[in-house]
Image (cartoon, rainbow, N blue to C red; front, side, top):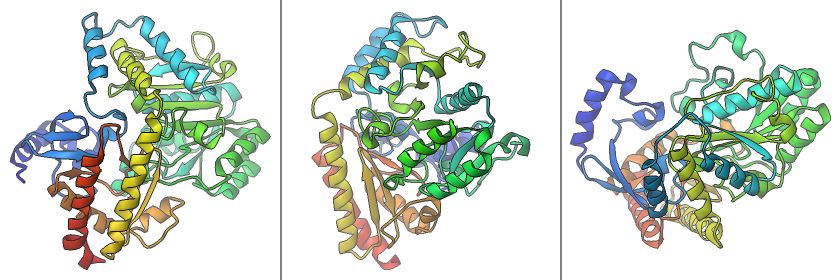
Length: 433
């Protein structure tokens, strides 16, 4: 399998783009080698500039729950762009999408659209502080909520990939109000509230930690957070940029039946275009400008192209048996990957929920926080990634990222993945374990 055109493009890219990429994890720093440049996607497949075709489990990091270039979404977007790309003024489609989200997520009574998950999380924090008139927030080690200054503390995702717990350029004074706890350790959160409760505006949490691979919440953890917030009159913010419409149609909050005060959304809500949002109770959202004193704005927020793609996507996933079929495929792949690895004496744990799954090269069956993820055999994942790539299967170029199933993946793609994995486990990884 040749990557000569990707190599040429990368050599050119590094002259003009820092590191040759526009998001750090794309640089292959977590697995070694040079990045692959993609040129097209169709259904469950992506094709690179050297015309190599791969079964895609990255899915642009989550938004493509329907697969690449779904014909219905494409048709509606093409019709929309004929009438203009963006206006910086209200449009009917943003109202329609706002209404749709509030129908699917009852905790979101009102919503404000933005262009990225970083914007949404940053704005949600500002809103929580403005509403409560408090300063501090609690976040969890390994959870990633975008790259705004106050949240770049013990973050996951790309920061884990590169082993950088904090970013240069962030003054200590900016993060002094960010309190840290280990995910799934409710007693640590309780201790923080005991000491700082009168000044804690909010907890922000990924209800399923999907930026340090895939860490599921322990039974009672999310409800425990809800109870602590109620006790201390703080707000609970669910960052569902990844889990929203992935874990269930109503998000992780519907799956676990825990109601947040503010919800952060992204990825699927834009149907593959840049869009994100934050929303919550009306009394909280009323503190946003122009109604209230908490300022937030964006030139491309709610642009009609992204809103059209998002609305079309939500309409398609809100069909009978959509999630039942999608989640079943994910479960089948996860179980069979685990079984194949076991047959070849490869220590692999495969965790899944909804259409998300995570690969952990470890004997340890329970993964409950960032430390457990870091203790896995990262070098083994690197070998697995490159070997699967040669087999035509594209997983995330980092052991700290989750994998995504789409509705476009079918029996043929699952079979191809399992057959490739069996060859990789047998020839490449067996002697390494």
